[in-house]
Length: 212
Ligand SMILES: CCCCCCCCCC(=O)SCCNC(=O)CCNC(=O)[C@H](O)C(C)(C)COP(=O)(O)OP(=O)(O)OC[C@H]1O[C@@H](n2cnc3c(N)ncnc32)[C@H](O)[C@@H]1OP(=O)(O)O
Image 1: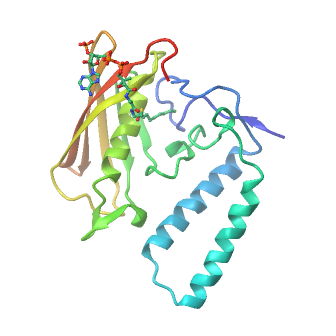
Image 2 (image 1 turned 180 degrees about the horizontal axis):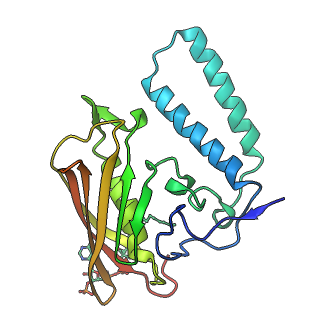
């Protein structure tokens, strides 16, 4: 039996369906796919943090090749892709740390995120590119919810105020500040407790008819 992939991209509704993707992609089991993504995230972390002997590396490479071969025959075009459209925190997209929504409406969202070992930059701090990934994910979704015409990031300005530690639950708050014609201005902060670790301002431009 197959299930339609949900229009919402988080277990707590993010106030609407952005329809960034073509609706109707089917997945054999959302729960099983989520299990695969969770396992993949752990593999990413374990690979990033490992320094095993060569014999173990040979075995691990063979096992990973086996997984790649198993999935190779099931590749689909973007319109049928499941990753990115799963109704689970993080949309099943293992590139971006999963964002867990606690509160959302059409103009703001608050949630939690944690940067695991995979996202290490150096010196215990999250990679400077991993933080904009999360801001783009959250602001991009917020820019498009509530039946708005879909938009794309035109710019994303990030200020790094303090190092972002790994493996700690952080909060992220974002808001839709204003709109001028096709231009949507949004902002957000990433915090550990009361301390702002990073903040961001983004411009998202609504796409014209037929614009990719
Ligand atoms: C479930 C799905 C969830 C998805 C979540 C993740 C969402 C992630 C969103 C993304 O990351 S999208 C991918 C990254 N972004 C891109 O690939 C965008 C690439 N750039 C473009 O496609 C175009 O440049 C863009 C659509 C952003 C704008 O081009 P247009 O030709 O449509 O707009 P135009 O150049 O006419 O500009 C419209 C207005 O925006 C302004 N503008 C555009 N880019 C700007 C910029 N960079 N800085 C300042 N202003 C800018 C421009 O000046 C103008 O202002 P005015 O109306 O006041 O004259």
